[in-house]
Image 1 (cartoon, rainbow, N blue to C red):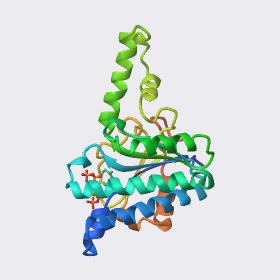
Image 2: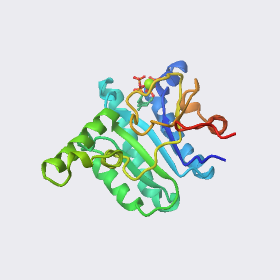
Image 3: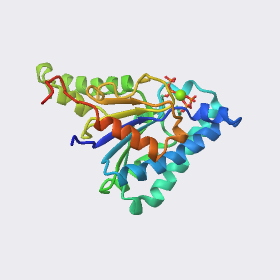
Image 4: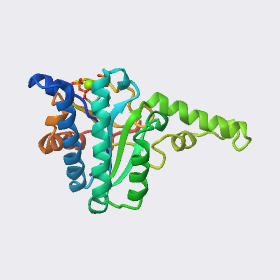
Length: 234
Ligand code: IPE
Ligand code: IPE
Ligand code: MG
């Protein structure tokens, strides 16, 4: 049986979920945040070791100010709740994204990362102010700095050097990438890390993505034939 260690999710469709019910978009985000908590428990139960969720992109700042504020408020309470329950949940939480744009949330994020760093349960990566191109640019700047300082020669730069310069350094690449709510695009998510990941798209909106839907995605993954450029073994 092939391994399934890492699931990456683009949790999409909160706004449409709310609109369909005649509710403000914010209600969709509230429901979506609740579903993140449930999904973490489910993934842990199913033996998944890493879960990476795309919660706010570098492009999402374009949204109306009140929506952005509502989402940031939800992150703030989510971080509080993770800090409170960190011992019990045994979850290691890390942020992926550009920390420079997250001044207000940063103290709580760093506190949570520090207190959860030795936890041995689920590894949760939350992508906030995350854009894959931004992550790659920051990684290249770091590598270029080492080259300029004479610590690294250009011909020593390898795929590992690049992987290690990204926010995901030390985290295995996702095996399965799920996007909810019908869109079939990456929207600037983990462009480097998803090179050989299996993709699963579902029309179900994120707030409705439950255990049955997760099982369906996992089952689809187990029926895929991963070849990594090789030949299928008979
Ligand atoms: C995903 O839901 C959450 C964020 C991007 C913050 P959306 O808010 O994108 O929901 P839709 O796609 O507009 O329905
Ligand atoms: C991608 O969703 C970002 C997150 C889920 C955080 P978007 O809703 O922002 O993506 P587009 O605009 O439909 O591509
Ligand atoms: Mg969307």
